[in-house]
Amino acid sequence: MKQLPIYILISLSLISCRTFEPQAYEPPIKPEPVGIYEPNTELQKAILLAIGKVKGLESLDVDSDGNIYGGDKDGRIIRITLKGEIKAIAKTSGRPLGVQFDKVGNLIIADAYKGLLSMDKSGKITTLVSEYKGVPFQFTDDLDIAQDGKIYFSDASIYEQKEYLYDLLEARPYGRVFVYDPKTKETQLLLDHLYFANGIALSKNEDFLLVNETYRYRITKLWLKGPKKGSSEVVIENLPGFPDNITRNENGDFWVALFTVRNDRMDSMHPSPVVKKMIYFMPKFMWPKAQPYGYALKMDGNGKVLMTVQDPTGEHLKDITSVIEKKRQLYIGSLYNDRIGIYVLP
Image 1 (cartoon, one colour):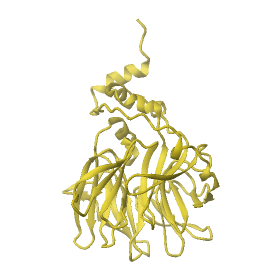
Image 2: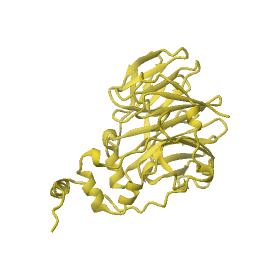
Image 3: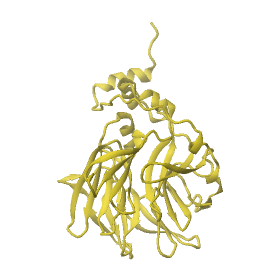
């Protein structure tokens, strides 16, 4: 009888010692790269800023003066001026992810470890909310702010940010969506049982909210007003990659950042909880790897894809986690990359 490799034997011996219960998932066959998904090199035309000078600005926003803001992997809030000056103006002591300015100029921050934060113009950080019913948020991820000041945000998983790949393997619906009201300081749970609740975006009329379910390759719509209020539905599924953040432009369409394209090896593992349990205990270098690929798509509120911008090489832009449109320019952030991209729309 052929002896099993040592890493499998170690894995099997550890399985009974750890609580990790992946469930079977049958991913849909990924869409063919044709039609609207046909590869292109549009993102290779993007202007690159701060190459080698920033560390993983996962999400971005732009102030009224054109300065770019984001949070880096060291927990700092970074400002990049029009002159190219780069400065750390605050530190959350966590991992800032989603960022967005409110009406009065405060930068609202979804920090994976600290919760929902607010930074005023002087750089002072204030915690808005960090728990729900006495239980701390585990992975505060992204946000969007309504006209009345309410802040909609996601708590992606029961796993911490540095362990997000465990959520991918376990394939269980741990994600949630909340709304925080700064006036009453109350937090309300709006939707749960989501498969890694990531990016969030309100519709132009604020009658619905879109939330990316990264590990189901889909986007869910939660109705906030009208006859369907409180109900949810999948607005687009079987995306060609892993949807990360989502933002709305002035016309009411949405930009979806795809962290990378679908991983055939991971899709083939999903139907088997046993295989995924073995992978869980293996060294990370043996896990399925993300392909370097730059990808973002534009869609309407009904899930119709209108265009894609890509960099199949991943050499110019890759690991894209946020795309925001300002004055016909896309500002492109990344959880891991060392640069910001600016793509001028045709």
